[in-house]
Length: 308
Image (cartoon, rainbow, N blue to C red; front, side, top):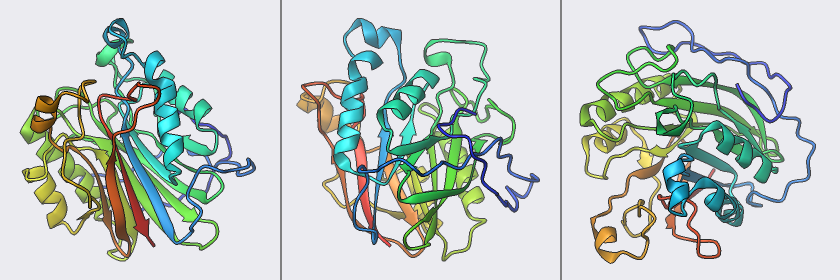
């Protein structure tokens, strides 16, 4: 597991799903909280969360001017501007994870399990991951873990329901150093092709998250590849999760063509930030910023501000 620090926390985990024993949490690490921090929100009664599909690093994108090397600085600058406390990333390859850690030094990044679990070493065949970054100054890492969105969640790289590729989820449990409040964030990316795969994958997440008491705060971030009226989103809401989004309902993808009005009219909102427990969303909107004319991804990022 690739991480940015190397001090181990004490963790205690109960069960995973009914058909499994313990959720495997590979080598976990607690950050050494010594670095000066200016990145996150100042109001400790509020929690600002970002969900960012940054698009994997593809050679084909590089050829047309949309590669990661071109977009990297735009991605970092736009994230820093939001002054958030927690970021859930999707479509992250190992070199992008290292760039994010280097560029977001005020945050602790965790959740890139290796090895790649794939015979392909480059391109979209590689299994992208879903790491979580959080404020070093504000939070203490209590425990964390990951699982795969398949019928065998503890089998790395496992694929079920004809999913186009292996999908995984990562979660962290954090404690606010000032208030002592604890909460949990789970972050993932659902399949982009098969409807049945998406429906079954979200059930894995919902069942795993249901182990926690109703009064325990949980936040769910990710690229669901599902529109707001889909069965996937209906299933999430049925389990008591609340959609944080309060802005104008628009698409969250643009395919590097943000000025194309016809494309924008067809685009669907497929990125979400949900919450559960004693936490209330006060604001949420789609971030359409660019940096020096460069967009950070083929997705717009999504921000939500909660009141604890």
